[in-house]
Amino acid sequence: MSLISLSLYAQDLPPSDAQLINATLVARANSTDGFGLPPASILGIADVKVNNRGDIAFDVDVIGGENTSGVWYAANATQGRIVYRSPIEGRLISDPSLNNKGDLAFSQFDFGVTDGVFKFDSNTRATTLVIRPEQNQAFSFSSINDIGTVVTRVVDSNRDRSYRYVNGGVARVLVKEGVKDSKGVTLSHLYRPVLNNTGFVAAKVRRGEIGQNDESQPDAIRLWKPDGSYDVIAVDINADANSLFLGFGNSVGISDAKHIVFVATISGDKQAVFLYGEGKIKAVAIEGQGDLDAIEAFAPVVNSKGLVAFRGRLKSGKSAIFTGTWDGFKAIAKQGDLVATDIETAKIYDLPDNQGFIGGLSLNDSGLLAFHAGILSKDGERFLGQGIYVLSTTAPPAGR
Image 1: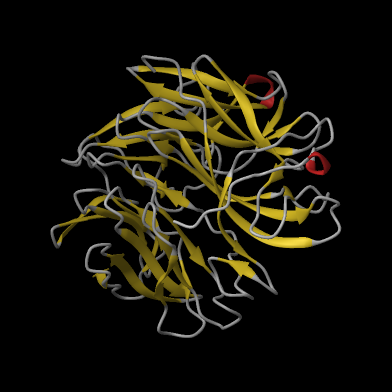
Image 2 (image 1 turned 90 degrees about the horizontal axis):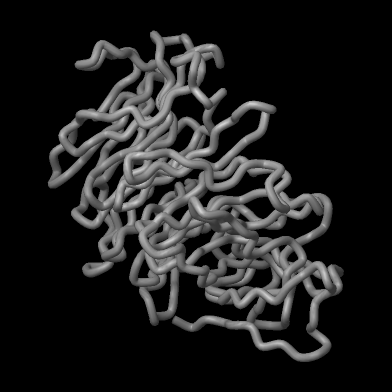
């Protein structure tokens, strides 16, 4: 893979509140030029993905100034490129899911139109339709694991949601809103599901009948097993008056070791990142601790060693990326930090009209973190586009 790493000279040294980030540039999109992408490409709010062998993937909203979207993919140590272009002008592509074989799953859609869920096979380089829509169905949050299981959230013509679990061409419904399960529980809202390589699915859910969606309804974090049974990992105070949790963020993360990471509101109206693993739940970070002022509304992620990554805001007001374990957390990149580009040393966007970082994060089992950020010239006078980066992070303590 042709990548750009940081090489700095004395004139590149940052101000005292910034640092040199040894992040590697994977791709850059800009109106007049680009790296790994045609000029005039636009990434939108693409969530970049990285797998355990270092492959990288993300969606592209506009390819080379054309009204065409697609999926960009790079196998480790190879040059990245667009591997799928929508054949229909104006269609959009969801954030792709990436497994450790390099296969991708994503949906293609426009407002009011869904073409289905597609799979890109990294060996054959072919893209095939794996879930076909029926009766005005819509798909979101599609995931694929190493054994080829695809999970997606389906919204039907009545606006009811379900999780569809597809393996070996056989599809089944994991759970559906408004349908009482074997434990006598009915759900009124299904949030974003996440899938791991052993077939477990985690998500936030809301209990109640169809239409009972207000914040007074009981919420829970669930973990489904491949056989369709599930465990309740955590509940809020609307389900249990003794719960520590006043509410949950809408998105969770899962690892192949069945860690689950989630954001919850606790007493004092503070938000905190919590990690479930080894049969226990403990806080990783709480707003107000250290330099953390606020947790930003993007899904946290966790790897199989129990290392967590999340987005937040420092007490200085700058947005940052944090990593942590049960033993503590730290900021590893923030607005204004210097990064490499293919044309010059730049900084992560730090003007007041923008958070700098864009979309969610991805973290593999080696601690390689992928992120997406706006970038500026060091003097802040020129916008250099949107950069896709990877950054090696500190391994968590042994045994975590």
